[in-house]
Image 1 (cartoon, rainbow, N blue to C red):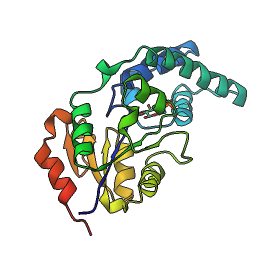
Image 2 (spheres, protein in one colour; image 1 turned 90 degrees about the vertical axis):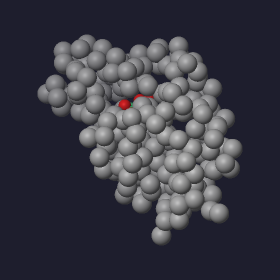
Image 3 (cartoon, protein in one colour; image 1 turned 120 degrees about the vertical axis):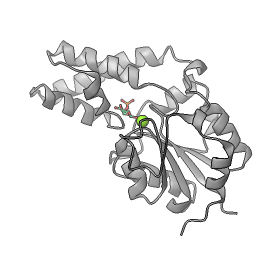
Length: 221
Ligand code: BG6
Ligand code: MG
């Protein structure tokens, strides 16, 4: 049987770091006199650091120099890292570790496909770094989701056909990327937001081994 590749997004799938991104972006936006709400934060999910700041500046109708832009990005990241530094295994989302172990027991490929440049550090903090055969993160790609580059790169590194890849994502941009890549897309989160996914679950506690076995066995042409 062909070995499948299970590709996991990080933020919002493995760990709930969206709340830390929110706090850091809000502090930064407010410091330059721009309002920032949880609704706006939703639109930054899966979006790169550069694109996120561009959106905040557009919402606030602010125009700044290239130098200030770089400075603000670095301030945001320093603040974000102050939360990340306190993370531990307790912040792994429910049943994620169990599913990673099951897929490993079933001899499947496991990859990370994340837009974050802090991905390795976060995986290390929550002690999951050694669970992944391949890690593709924000340092390895030039095109942000919904461009499928991040997932296709993981497939290439694993010598897997995209049709034999299954992507877990919490963002619409990520689901679109998986669909464009002809991979199976599994949304983790709100059914309405993620309706373009092949399957949607609220969280990993809703995913059982029968479902995983079907994905492992499925032949896609
Ligand atoms: C994504 C997050 O995974 O990574 C985004 O959903 C974030 O909110 C992006 O902006 C980049 O993350 P980082 O850690 O490189 O700033
Ligand atoms: Mg995400």
